[in-house]
Length: 383
Image (cartoon, rainbow, N blue to C red):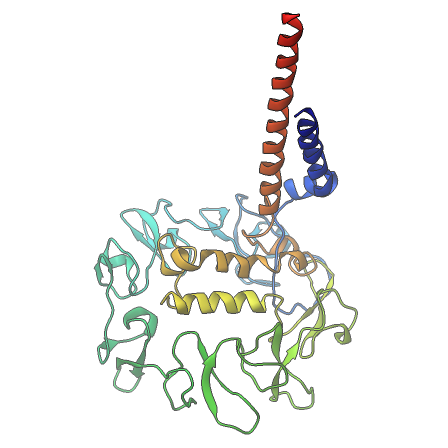
């Protein structure tokens, strides 16, 4: 039994050494890192932004933003909003007198509190909190042939709003099923599907997102297996094909270092170069998983994953977090302090698991050691 106690103590020390003292502390006290995917072409690292909780004069929306001059250092980083002169992530539950006191887009001021608007089918407590304007436990929508102005605002899941801008009215109609022919004059594909040709020269059909293989024609969200949709030939920019991601890092010295269809650009925020492009993302698989989760859970693509009780939040929160945090490791070269991602940095899950395991091992070791020491003492006392 004594040997078991020492083995458990040894195991605890080994676990700490595996985690690595420096790496472990770096992760433990790591600041928020950031990620951004837009093309940045000015290579002068001159912009400055402020973070969550800091005083601000406006929001950072890009270089030489007309709403806030980034040089004065009082602009909230992209991903944050300047509300009441303070940079905030969101203000759900915050006090308000009008919707202007809440975050722009998707929020309303109800009973002097900022609350997210809910989509059709999501839980609600007030008509004002539904995009459809109708609440009866859940936000009410229109069925087939029912009136509508916008799909996600009015139609039940699986339908789309066929709106006539000449007559200024619309009705909810069926979407196109997976495997059926699709195109610009045909209703959009059912949730979780996208319209693309399976092979060159054939007509387009509704196919599952991420189901197209490398070398075949594509549209955004069609490619899977770690590939992206890009113009495979620079002389034929309209010829989009699924191509394999050839770089695991955004660092580059020329576009030859980047995935086909991506270019080597320079961040004017940090002064560092990185691979970017309209079709390039380091989070392709994670994004596809999130989209598919929404479809499987009968959530609208526009369901707000940040809203407590929303369809996306209740069913696909973990997939959403993965889609947001997968690019954290490549963010420093792109956005630096001018992009905030609340899903980056902080205390890593693996570290929490290691701490729990080590704590259990050490506690057991201490208990066993104390037990044997007391037992030995009783033995000597009895002699």
